[in-house]
Length: 301
Image (cartoon, rainbow, N blue to C red; front, top):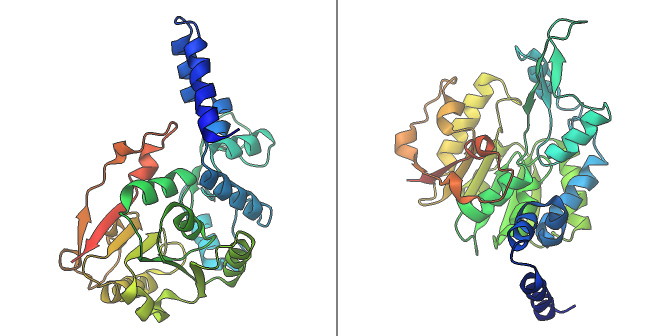
């Protein structure tokens, strides 16, 4: 059915509905999971397909044994914590895995008792909700712009940037060869090769790439993968090279939080100005406001 014919058909259904039932029908259209499947955008479908492809190629914790330091840091956390990649596993998928006994949201505080507490989940990827917020509400029009994702991991920021923005080039810099290979597989399968490039490297070897970037994205990028001295050196390198006036830096968590436990020479007030975000602008249902508030935007001075 052509678009115009489909519109007429929908309007005919609405006009033909009894006045008393119309509010209930409109409520169903806005809130029913059944109707969601009909109105979800094609780009959302593509990203969900990519997530499913990646889930089938990764262990459930979405971490490789080659990530020695990150795995060790998670195990050393004072409270039980598990890595649940937000791009791969939305709440519905997590619920299904919990029902199947493959994942749990809680742990026993005293073995053998009924005393349980919530597990802390950590993710090194943006969820679909966060990606749409990033490209549709946080960042401006990216036509002709260069985006660099530091620690691109599974490529979620790159794939979403390809689908939701007009950025001319999207670069992912990733140290882990296993993740680079996964990203390349998805880039080839989904024909993203014209605008996405993955660089297998330490970001501290890529000054020219950072210097030409119009947008740099950093999501939980150093804390779990470098010791504190290495983190400090990495942040100082970022601050020296992300210098294009008016360019944008997106971080999770805030720069203030990331740098608070480190000894660095980074002078935030002389480097960046935070841009206040409107977290209420994202109107889709089931919004995780707390997750959105972790996203911070800065303009380079």
